[in-house]
Image (cartoon, rainbow, N blue to C red; front, side):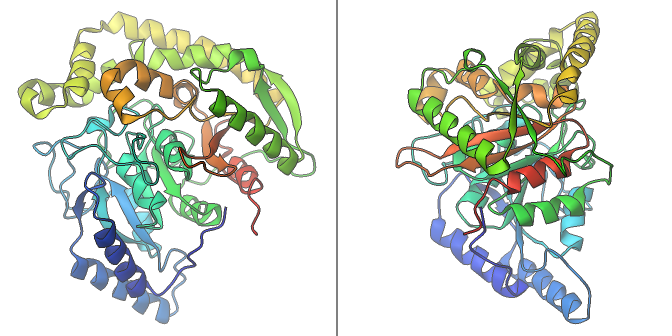
Length: 428
């Protein structure tokens, strides 16, 4: 996938972004925009630095930031207007991108306190899908994904604990990068589940995303597949679910076959059950207690300001006993050992990002069960310390986004999985 808009002069890029945002006009994408004149002044400073000879790899690129990540001068609300403060400085991940030339134009809507994969749990309104009205935008990083998919900005930051970066990328037909936990700093980010939180990146162009990732990520060594075809782990069809959607199943099968051809890969068999079992611990286990530890006292004091579904999830976590959390940590450690054997035989595990993309009506009717379905393949990735990239494969349909593949690799192999993802796209 190649971005159709090459980098342009920073002031022109900012003007274009604000013009497109104004023309789009849909509510539910943004929580707050930077003043246009302020963003233009930042763009002029970038242009002056370039003219002075500095190498700024993100000059001419515009950036949106999920509103649970600090942006200097804008209140970090995590989707709750009465929560948070105006930070005196950018979060380190934002500052890295800004120092590389990107210009922040605004902060985006989200499932409140990053509690949800749906994009419907916000007092700022339901975030619209970028291209397919009636379908969810995905969450919790809904606004960031839509801002990129609708071509309002070039790049966006989200967060991803259970799939909050990858699910909205799939729902809107773009690329989502979820790094190895710890590769990208989470300072200045409102925690959801501190043990597993990650900052995620959205884009329409993999080369641009690789540049952005290199800008924000801590350097680390990682194995490569150079010199041989990649070994692609794939579970048996019986271990996969598409929640009854035969079209989604067929699109995934076609996308996987195309990916294997594009990568010239070798298929190896994978047992998905221990991975899925690890994922169940995130919400069906005790780790959700960390959500209460992060913001529980605030929601208890301000119940009228909290989305009812979000309140129910976080408030219930208060009563999970410490002993159960320790037991789940032991169970997770055992599952990590069980799943590690796959990586001696495979370079990447390829799965659907989501079983299917549901409608807003479905989510409002069954908020918990539909949310759980969406996390089927994403929930386990952070718990097992893995990295992943979600990529759209094949053409979109009038009724929904293209099939989305999730490439998953061991910790520290972010650059390898990004390179494999890049090979899936025909630059023509």
